[in-house]
Length: 299
Image 1 (spheres, rainbow, N blue to C red):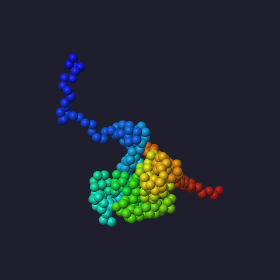
Image 2 (image 1 turned 135 degrees about the vertical axis):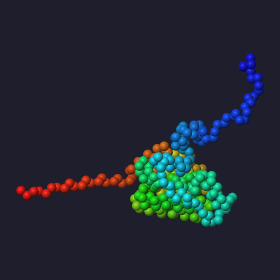
Image 3 (image 1 turned 90 degrees about the vertical axis):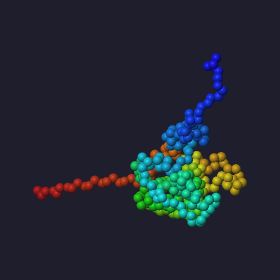
Image 4 (image 1 turned 45 degrees about the horizontal axis):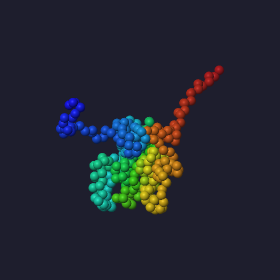
């Protein structure tokens, strides 16, 4: 019967009538392969709803998560890199910077801002891996140094969110000098008794790990973050041995005493608030003004 038989072979739909799923509607976890909507993924703070895998996010997302009502004042937002060495690899360094700025909308690999976290004043510097692998150049070091100065001048805690492949090769020695520069500024912050919390996210490696990322009063990390100095392949080739399972993961680094604890991104804001409440001095209660006593009348 005709309704059980396909009379025409194939289904022909005009191109203008074809409907495709728009890009960016769905998220597929790179760890467990679970699929969920991007809206749900963003609501879950860019972590997998099934396995809790933490996706890499940038300063825009971290500021939205941590600052109250996503309200903050950005500092030194137009500071950009020069070309001190006239460096050229596959393209001149200035062209690489310009292309990366256009692609990412960022000026360099770190953004700094101040605002409030659950009502507490705080200064935050957050790195962006999308900008040349989050590499640390002279602009990164300068912006972090200025953010620390702001924290000192305004008596606020300082939070550093690291996400970097290490020092920027295009600036050679200039980038390595930022390790000493930022470490010296953090020493001044410590002398003034202001707390410094270092949050290590995926990945935190190279000169960043060897300087400010590991100098926090509290060194904390997100689950599964890669944390190390040299890469696993380089280490294996150097020592000639297989590396332990999970080597350089946040959990491995915690087990070996280089982290204080690991915090899920969804609990991060409250955990930071609890830490700051614990370490910041409480305001002394205002003493009541003594009541004036009436002079005794002579009898």
